[in-house]
Each structure stands twice: as structure tokens, then as C-alpha cells.
Length: 111
Image (cartoon, helix red, strand yellow):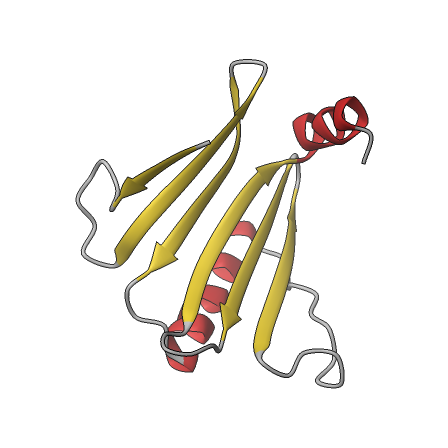
């Protein structure tokens, strides 16, 4: 796993990026956002709906109290947006995972 500040393109919106590799392949990228407001969460959700043309699934409000999650099925990739309310800071990130490689990693690690 590699954590880097920002992104290679110097996006002003991204605080940090995390990259995860398995068998020399990139299997996961997570972008942590500077702005962590609920409106930023909804903006990201709308952008991904437009980009992938699918509506996300989300747990109902009874399971998520201190966070909100949206899951997108984007073909070979799983995309998750999550906002976690915590002190002293709230966290907002978008996670991209390669489905087949993640399954191979889980099998190899016995999960």
C-alpha cells in the first residue's frame, strides 16, 4: 500500500490518495477529500451517477448513524463513496476497487 499527499495532477480537492497493489497490479485507489460536507458527498454521488449511468445502492438510515455510504456497480470495478462523521474531523472518500483482483486477494489471504 502506498499513501501519497494529493494526486499526481495536483487536484485542489484531494487531501490524500492511497494506492493498494496485489501481484504487482493496482487493485484499489482511495481519494480522501479536503471538503467533507454532506453537500460534497451528494455532489460526488451525482457525478458518479452521471459518469457510470447507474444508481448506487445504500443502506437505509437505520444502519448508518455516523456515516453515509453509496455503492456503485461499475462493471469490473466497485466504487464506494463514504462520509464518516468523527471527531475531530469528518472523513470523505471515494474508493475504486478492481473486483476480480480483490476476490483473488481475499482467497489468497483466506478471508
